[in-house]
Length: 98
Ligand SMILES: [Zn+2]
Image (cartoon, rainbow, N blue to C red; front, side, top):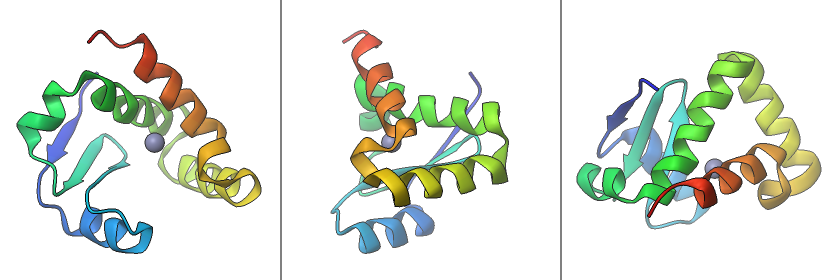
């Protein structure tokens, strides 16, 4: 799957601020934006990579805008943890090789 990784991303920094996390990886389309995570470290973390690549696949499957709306809707109704797209991404983590 084709994807791009952007380190020290402003939008990931904003997400980290609002989420209250010290470090964040956030996907928009086929780009994974990182804040306080080194690119090399992220790419070597097979579970984390599998999780974010699942979101890249979800963007591809549903389309950019449609996925954003569906993701926000799921989070609103079920919360972040029980959002079906997060459940799917966590399942992808466990199928990744360590
Ligand atoms: Zn996720």
